[in-house]
Amino acid sequence: MSQTSNQYDQVIHQCRDIFFKKNEDYGMAWRILRPSSLTDQLYIKAKRIRSIEEKESMKIDEAIEMEFIGIINYCVMALIQLESDEYDGEDMALQELKDKYNHWIIATKGLMMDKNHDYGEAWRDMRVSSMTDLILMKLLRIKSIEENDGKTIISEGLDANYQDIINYAVFALIKLEEEKI
Image 1 (tube, rainbow, N blue to C red):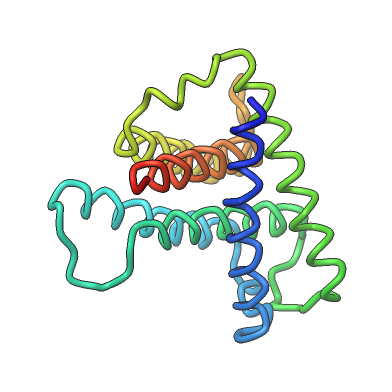
Image 2: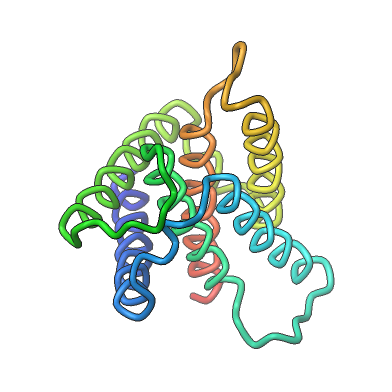
């Protein structure tokens, strides 16, 4: 499992680097988005991946790896926004943003390590297309929870679903990288 931990960290390093470079370019404009808008953005990215997987071609020259990275970073944004009561586009201090990003990544990696232990790294035997489908399913679950004002009777909440999406996207990126070798 140390291989998985190291691979996870490499993927997250790349995602974090892109996140904070985009933060330099665009600032924190995403802070205006409500979690439901972030869910819709995630859905669009996942649908593009599925479309490319099914058509086996693309017209926009942006690899699906970048879409999975976008999914990871949009999920972190959604998790940060879930902690907020207002979506007014208000910036936060850069160090606070880094702390929040790192908090959610550490918690999400911990969740992955626990599940990975229990499931015996079953994800390694999965297809990337199945991970895409699971991400889409989780997004549909999130939409249902959002439509119920965030309330669930027995199911996990929004944060757990966003974390599962992050982990599936990380697994997909690891598998895509391994396919290149």
